[in-house]
Length: 180
Image (tube, rainbow, N blue to C red; front, side, top):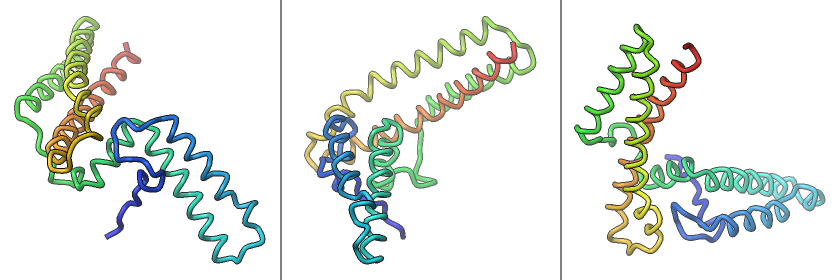
């Protein structure tokens, strides 16, 4: 099993959904300089290879941790919460999504700007409720004692999966907008 490197440890930062952006950038630039191939041109091929791997790790770490969605997916997958088949969503939410998808299918056959606007309003409203509900969890995660973290991660997982569903609906809506 290939384990993902611990990017937070690599940057000497605590695991967090809201890491200090300035600290993140500082670490990235410091390590970019430290692992720049030009500074290691005289070293052994093995050491140069190692430096190259560290430089790549630095780039991947920064790319992942500086993007909110990638960071969330990264933390969840490190805790084994994005594995296939481990993703249970509440039935009421799935029903809502199904209803929105049915409305989208109807729009497919009968384009109706007013109906599209209503679907968009519903998606926005669901999204805003989701965001408001998860924000305290994301903001408070870092300060949680270890034993309460799994519950918080569960909440974040649910949020993340719901957000993905809503994103797909948004993408479909965007296609209608370009057609009409």
